[in-house]
Image (cartoon, rainbow over all chains, first blue to last red; front, side, top):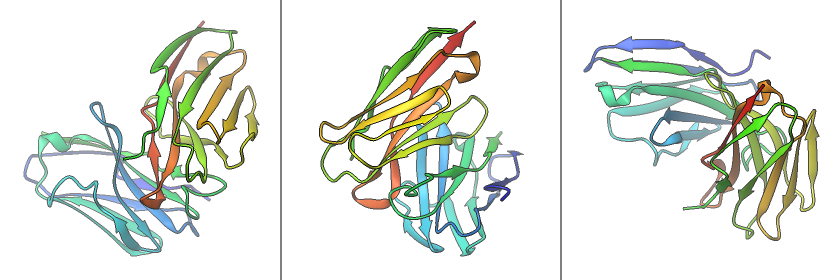
Amino acid sequence: DAGVIQSPRHEVTEMGQEVTLRCKPISGHDYLFWYRQTMMRGLELLIYFNNNVPIDDSGMPEDRFSAKMPNASFSTLKIQPSEPRDSAVYFCASSLGQFGGSNYGYTFGSGTRLTVV
Amino acid sequence: ILNVEQSPQSLHVQEGDSTNFTCSFPSSNFYALHWYRWETAKSPEALFVMTLNGDEKKKGRISATLNTKEGYSYLYIKGSQPEDSATYLCAFPSPDSWGKLQFGAGTQVVVTP
């Protein structure tokens, strides 16, 4: 398996523009997570899905952020409109089973480094 | 909010020395304890998932122990090498939402030659 695949690896955009981050989880994994890494807050959970259904979006900072998982092999995180404070590394992760993936834990993607200027 | 605490926040180790650090978590409603290694400019990588009290797991020079009754886990690095430099995160399933992990702030390990 190629692991969790995220695209793009880097994104530079202007303030006010729409940004879409993409994630392909590991085949067969039933949980998908979106995290954001910042200097101030470390690794911050934004939202997670179980079997394509959003379960907990309490970490989504505001209405400018939205996430979808139309099928088991694809998820998007959208920011509209983007702001400079959204600049961060965004990670997608997937796992199999509850409790963080009972045997193997999370598998993280390589991340998308977003810069909003 | 679940408290997963790691100490120390950072430590410096001479190459060849051994070291260890701690993760503390609530001892009630235990299901699993995870350890991840996070190298700079990379993504976190799962090291261990531990579920049983007294469990000990090993991967190369890195090992971990688990005490669920008192709520702590130790991670040990034997004969540290520069490539062991990373932030080590522990994580615990959040009781309000079992699908997600609550991560600690991490212990940053710097191994100097």
